[in-house]
Image 1 (tube, rainbow, N blue to C red):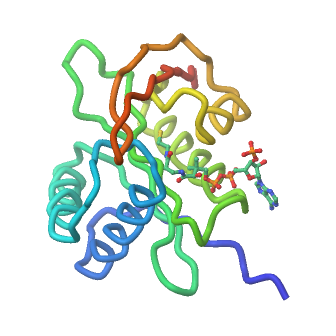
Image 2: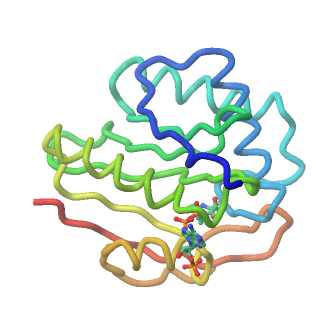
Length: 175
Ligand SMILES: CC(C)(COP(=O)(O)OP(=O)(O)OC[C@H]1O[C@@H](n2cnc3c(N)ncnc32)[C@H](O)[C@@H]1OP(=O)(O)O)[C@@H](O)C(=O)NCCC(=O)NCCS
């Protein structure tokens, strides 16, 4: 029998248990080759420090943090970054879409995107921007969900094991 679909939740405070689960998801994605700011090896301590900073930003209202949970705990996450210049009050960046390999290809990322977009709309953030590895699984996800592809910046970042990857910039107008 299929296990139930992971539940999506917005976190307004982040517990130690949730930080541990988020660190697991980040490490799994980086070890799986995702170019999401970190190089290999990604030690647990570094991942935990990253999520503690995110938790502080969430507590200060600078970020919106969404998680999906399955029977093992946090299995996926995405963030909205609200902390932008004062001339962009209508905008947010979408960042760190991460789905643990155990939870992929079940629509979890799409559900997280819908939750983040709804929350952005509710607080008047009607223009969302993101960038993602060109040619990766996430690029298809965003295009499928109706995001507009702006263009490609060649050799923008490195893969976790080394080697350049290009990035594709997308936006979505929720107005
Ligand atoms: C990219 C990523 C977020 C997608 O997460 P996901 O939860 O697997 O995404 P979805 O399930 O919504 O969609 C993925 C695929 O599964 C398919 N799918 C969705 N539900 C499905 C289901 N019930 N049965 C079968 N397939 C399904 C989708 O159609 C999609 O197909 P495609 O890859 O051929 O386009 C995930 O692979 C990931 O975390 N990658 C590493 C980190 C990363 O690159 N993040 C992006 C940073 S910008």
